Image (cartoon, rainbow, N blue to C red; front, side, top):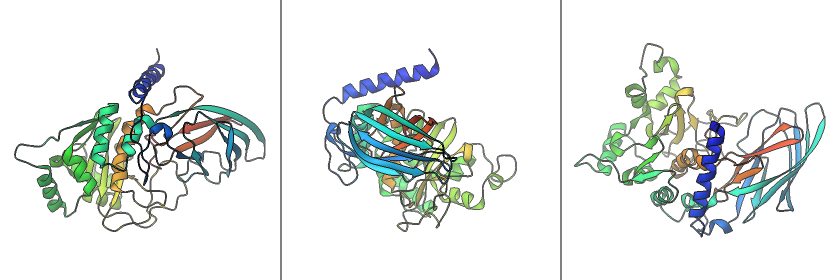
Length: 373
């Protein structure tokens, strides 16, 4: 069996097991909503066309046989946009989504299409993580216990040391005040997702300290010297930022918090989101969260909301589970299956074409390469 088929088989088995596990009702909540059963909630989705410059798509959006919206979009820039071209409600229990319309290329040639996807909703396994009525640490523990997509054990602390003492020591050393959700999450659980993990309170440090002490970089001189690899602004960010989650995979990466926040129109470094207006400062003293990776060490990827302002600490910490845990169950099992997550505050559905008559609709909210949501 090929690696691809083995992965699909594994994911299909994982989904079946998780679906059976959550056969009844479970807590679910979107932002500012009280919990309700995963099967009975209404979500929202946004279609993000990925077209060639000058191409135009028009399409009816039909949900379970009912026309609910019409997409009309012409690409002026390449890539996938953070803001969708169309947003529509997802009715509870959605079974099928159909797109029917036409794609016109930059030379004016058109082709019509109609395609229907069978919908699979991930809400039964994700809803616990989005239950805003519970503290984040409780959501994470429940998610880990019920799905086994993450592990949440008792904190690892040296004898005679408390988490709060470790946090205070770091704060005094770096002259910062750590976000409260971070202190709660790291202070009450040792969390691991595969080979990647949240740092224990006593192991926290700056990004630069990790790059120099464990990742093989040097400060000055040689092919791995930070002063040569990084712009001054990025190096300064790494010097003052706190690394909180270490990604171990195809190279090393990290989630980090910069207490200084963003500058106006700063580049977001979000893959695919061309022509965006850049970052916008938000609440003073709350900083900005970002991802970094060895493959693009000079371009930290800012975690921003739809207004291009820094995401909250809670949203940034939740993003870890979106990218590394929920992504494991987000793959379609067939070419005609559309994965959604009605518990997610929004769903990023990428629309692209393999040919004028071959639309492809793909759930990207949990894709590793995107922090658009």
